[in-house]
Length: 279
Image (cartoon, rainbow, N blue to C red; front, top):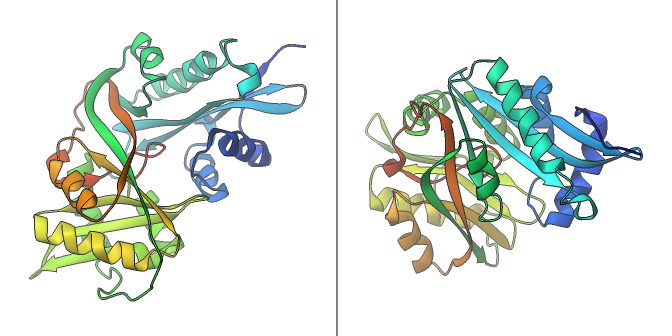
């Protein structure tokens, strides 16, 4: 019996969740649905004996920038070229769509594979985590200027991902925060309720005080006992703030790109990414 490669469907999510759980990742069913609804022709599955044993997924932002995530292979089937084949299909799909730049966040183990496909390092990312006792006593209101926040995020991230951010705000409105200076957005956060932890991100701010206020309020609002945050290297302020609040280092990642990196955005204003699966 051989491995069959095909498009992933909604019906494959239970098997995909099994792979994700074994890997110890934080995604939920809703995260898989986000990929499949946003780009159904760009999500792939490897099937063996009627079961999904590998996945890869893509999402395209504004036709200018694409993201590859959820490259997973069952531990029993590793070393057989399945991950490479799934990555090839993801890249091939994005090439046919003529997306000028493709990015991903690589683990140290995956980085050599991505380099073989022409991915270059952009900057490093550090995951930090906090174990805390939720108290649920918010002091900032939930964002009401979502459209203005989305315009600012496009500039900071480098492409329009408003559909995805609206989805986050609808699912976890208590974690969608905005800090304003007059009529100007001075900073914002979004968040997700993951299977293991609440994920803080994206988290952006124009100055240290705003960044600290948003971080503290996010922690207050988090209903889980564990919080993940993926701090970006070009903004050392983020790591300093989370360390001061008792976050512990978890793992390194490398943001990588393939093609013309014309969507670099303004990473110096970005404290934390949305997460390795979405950017």
